[in-house]
Image (tube, rainbow, N blue to C red):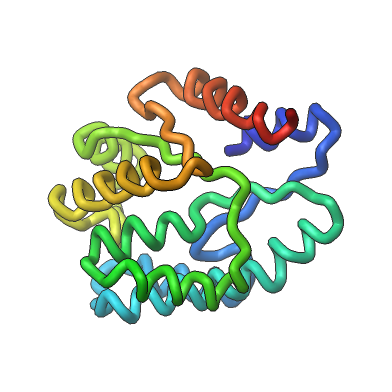
Length: 186
Protein backbone atom coordinates (compact mmCIF):
# COMPACT_ATOMS: atom_id res chain seq x y z
CA UNK A 1 0.00 0.00 0.00
CA UNK A 2 2.90 2.34 0.70
CA UNK A 3 4.17 1.87 -2.88
CA UNK A 4 0.75 2.82 -4.26
CA UNK A 5 0.64 5.88 -1.99
CA UNK A 6 4.12 6.89 -3.15
CA UNK A 7 3.00 6.73 -6.79
CA UNK A 8 -0.07 8.87 -6.04
CA UNK A 9 2.13 11.40 -4.26
CA UNK A 10 4.50 11.38 -7.24
CA UNK A 11 1.51 12.30 -9.40
CA UNK A 12 0.83 15.26 -7.14
CA UNK A 13 -2.07 13.75 -5.20
CA UNK A 14 -1.71 14.18 -1.46
CA UNK A 15 -2.38 10.80 0.13
CA UNK A 16 -2.99 9.44 3.61
CA UNK A 17 -2.59 5.78 4.62
CA UNK A 18 -4.76 4.23 7.28
CA UNK A 19 -6.05 0.82 8.37
CA UNK A 20 -8.90 -1.09 9.89
CA UNK A 21 -9.50 -1.81 12.57
CA UNK A 22 -7.63 1.17 13.90
CA UNK A 23 -6.51 4.46 12.45
CA UNK A 24 -7.74 6.50 15.42
CA UNK A 25 -7.05 6.23 19.17
CA UNK A 26 -10.44 4.59 19.75
CA UNK A 27 -10.03 2.39 16.68
CA UNK A 28 -6.60 1.27 17.85
CA UNK A 29 -8.05 0.30 21.24
CA UNK A 30 -10.77 -1.70 19.47
CA UNK A 31 -8.12 -3.31 17.24
CA UNK A 32 -6.33 -4.55 20.34
CA UNK A 33 -9.53 -6.19 21.60
CA UNK A 34 -10.47 -7.73 18.24
CA UNK A 35 -7.04 -9.20 17.54
CA UNK A 36 -6.02 -10.21 21.08
CA UNK A 37 -5.21 -13.89 21.36
CA UNK A 38 -7.47 -15.73 23.74
CA UNK A 39 -10.32 -13.24 23.38
CA UNK A 40 -13.61 -14.97 22.66
CA UNK A 41 -15.98 -12.85 20.59
CA UNK A 42 -19.29 -13.84 19.08
CA UNK A 43 -19.56 -13.12 15.36
CA UNK A 44 -22.01 -10.29 16.07
CA UNK A 45 -19.68 -8.74 18.66
CA UNK A 46 -16.78 -8.92 16.22
CA UNK A 47 -18.87 -7.27 13.50
CA UNK A 48 -20.04 -4.49 15.82
CA UNK A 49 -16.52 -3.80 17.10
CA UNK A 50 -15.12 -3.66 13.56
CA UNK A 51 -17.83 -1.21 12.62
CA UNK A 52 -17.36 0.90 15.75
CA UNK A 53 -13.72 1.29 14.75
CA UNK A 54 -14.81 2.02 11.16
CA UNK A 55 -17.27 4.71 12.27
CA UNK A 56 -14.48 6.47 14.17
CA UNK A 57 -12.14 6.20 11.19
CA UNK A 58 -14.70 7.53 8.73
CA UNK A 59 -15.74 10.36 11.04
CA UNK A 60 -12.29 11.47 12.17
CA UNK A 61 -10.01 10.58 9.25
CA UNK A 62 -11.57 9.49 5.97
CA UNK A 63 -14.34 12.09 5.49
CA UNK A 64 -12.19 15.02 6.68
CA UNK A 65 -9.32 14.00 4.38
CA UNK A 66 -11.61 13.51 1.39
CA UNK A 67 -13.22 16.90 2.01
CA UNK A 68 -9.74 18.44 1.74
CA UNK A 69 -9.10 16.65 -1.55
CA UNK A 70 -6.69 14.16 0.00
CA UNK A 71 -6.70 10.59 -1.33
CA UNK A 72 -7.26 7.94 1.34
CA UNK A 73 -5.79 4.46 1.08
CA UNK A 74 -7.23 2.17 3.72
CA UNK A 75 -5.97 -1.32 4.50
CA UNK A 76 -9.37 -3.04 4.73
CA UNK A 77 -12.83 -1.47 4.66
CA UNK A 78 -16.41 -2.63 4.21
CA UNK A 79 -15.65 -5.42 1.74
CA UNK A 80 -13.48 -7.00 4.42
CA UNK A 81 -16.46 -7.11 6.77
CA UNK A 82 -18.59 -8.68 4.07
CA UNK A 83 -15.91 -11.34 3.49
CA UNK A 84 -14.91 -11.99 7.10
CA UNK A 85 -18.12 -11.51 9.06
CA UNK A 86 -20.68 -12.65 6.47
CA UNK A 87 -18.82 -15.33 4.50
CA UNK A 88 -16.25 -16.29 7.14
CA UNK A 89 -18.35 -16.09 10.30
CA UNK A 90 -21.69 -16.89 8.68
CA UNK A 91 -23.63 -13.75 9.58
CA UNK A 92 -26.39 -12.72 7.17
CA UNK A 93 -24.87 -10.53 4.46
CA UNK A 94 -27.73 -8.04 4.72
CA UNK A 95 -27.06 -7.56 8.44
CA UNK A 96 -23.39 -6.94 7.74
CA UNK A 97 -24.17 -4.56 4.87
CA UNK A 98 -26.66 -2.57 6.99
CA UNK A 99 -24.21 -2.32 9.89
CA UNK A 100 -21.41 -1.18 7.58
CA UNK A 101 -23.70 1.38 5.96
CA UNK A 102 -24.58 2.77 9.39
CA UNK A 103 -20.90 2.97 10.36
CA UNK A 104 -19.83 4.67 7.13
CA UNK A 105 -22.88 6.79 6.38
CA UNK A 106 -22.88 4.99 3.04
CA UNK A 107 -19.35 6.09 2.09
CA UNK A 108 -17.93 3.51 -0.31
CA UNK A 109 -14.49 3.32 -1.89
CA UNK A 110 -13.88 4.18 -5.52
CA UNK A 111 -11.77 1.05 -5.80
CA UNK A 112 -11.06 -1.97 -3.64
CA UNK A 113 -8.11 -4.28 -4.16
CA UNK A 114 -8.48 -7.88 -3.16
CA UNK A 115 -5.10 -9.59 -3.12
CA UNK A 116 -5.85 -13.27 -3.70
CA UNK A 117 -3.46 -15.83 -2.27
CA UNK A 118 -3.87 -19.44 -1.27
CA UNK A 119 -4.27 -20.37 2.36
CA UNK A 120 -0.91 -22.13 2.22
CA UNK A 121 0.91 -19.02 0.99
CA UNK A 122 -0.87 -16.76 3.45
CA UNK A 123 -0.20 -19.10 6.36
CA UNK A 124 3.48 -19.37 5.43
CA UNK A 125 3.81 -15.56 5.24
CA UNK A 126 2.06 -14.99 8.57
CA UNK A 127 4.09 -17.72 10.25
CA UNK A 128 7.32 -16.32 8.78
CA UNK A 129 6.72 -12.72 9.90
CA UNK A 130 5.37 -13.43 13.37
CA UNK A 131 5.48 -16.42 15.63
CA UNK A 132 2.76 -14.82 17.73
CA UNK A 133 -0.28 -14.89 15.42
CA UNK A 134 -3.30 -12.77 16.39
CA UNK A 135 -6.81 -14.10 17.13
CA UNK A 136 -7.97 -14.01 13.52
CA UNK A 137 -4.70 -15.36 12.10
CA UNK A 138 -5.20 -18.41 14.33
CA UNK A 139 -8.41 -19.42 12.55
CA UNK A 140 -8.55 -22.75 10.73
CA UNK A 141 -8.00 -23.14 6.98
CA UNK A 142 -11.74 -23.63 6.38
CA UNK A 143 -12.48 -20.16 7.74
CA UNK A 144 -9.98 -18.57 5.37
CA UNK A 145 -11.35 -20.56 2.42
CA UNK A 146 -14.83 -19.18 3.18
CA UNK A 147 -13.36 -15.66 3.36
CA UNK A 148 -11.47 -16.17 0.10
CA UNK A 149 -14.54 -17.52 -1.67
CA UNK A 150 -16.51 -14.58 -0.29
CA UNK A 151 -14.04 -12.08 -1.72
CA UNK A 152 -14.18 -13.85 -5.08
CA UNK A 153 -17.98 -13.71 -5.10
CA UNK A 154 -17.94 -10.04 -4.10
CA UNK A 155 -15.46 -9.29 -6.90
CA UNK A 156 -17.79 -10.93 -9.43
CA UNK A 157 -20.69 -8.79 -8.19
CA UNK A 158 -18.97 -5.40 -7.75
CA UNK A 159 -16.90 -3.76 -10.49
CA UNK A 160 -15.12 -1.61 -7.87
CA UNK A 161 -13.32 -4.70 -6.59
CA UNK A 162 -10.13 -5.57 -8.45
CA UNK A 163 -8.67 -8.99 -7.80
CA UNK A 164 -4.87 -9.06 -7.76
CA UNK A 165 -2.77 -12.21 -7.87
CA UNK A 166 -0.91 -12.23 -4.57
CA UNK A 167 1.13 -15.27 -5.52
CA UNK A 168 3.24 -12.96 -7.71
CA UNK A 169 6.22 -10.97 -6.41
CA UNK A 170 5.19 -7.87 -4.45
CA UNK A 171 6.50 -5.51 -7.16
CA UNK A 172 4.16 -7.09 -9.72
CA UNK A 173 1.17 -6.84 -7.38
CA UNK A 174 1.90 -3.12 -6.95
CA UNK A 175 2.28 -2.67 -10.72
CA UNK A 176 -1.06 -4.41 -11.30
CA UNK A 177 -2.73 -2.24 -8.65
CA UNK A 178 -1.36 0.92 -10.23
CA UNK A 179 -2.53 -0.21 -13.66
CA UNK A 180 -6.03 -0.81 -12.30
CA UNK A 181 -6.03 2.64 -10.72
CA UNK A 182 -5.56 4.28 -14.10
CA UNK A 183 -9.34 4.20 -14.59
CA UNK A 184 -9.67 6.62 -11.70
CA UNK A 185 -7.47 9.14 -13.50
CA UNK A 186 -9.05 8.77 -16.95
